Image (tube, rainbow, N blue to C red):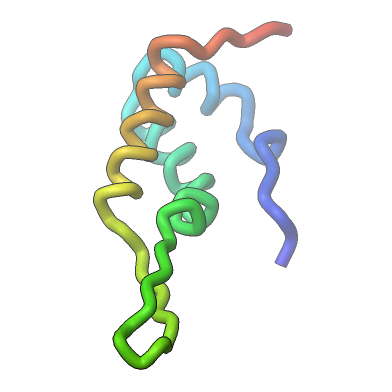
Length: 79
């Protein structure tokens, strides 16, 4: 499987996301979902010393919200 890149997102989708169009924001969120899930993965150790991995859904929500706010409020497209 090839690694996803920001260049894989069409410019028209990025322009619509900056305007706040929901379908474009959803496209970008789905593009970065695997990366966000990786960032939200946590490890804990039980009483027998065994490591367990879990995905923190609260962290996913916060990262997705921060990404959307960053796109809508601060993103500048330079041609």
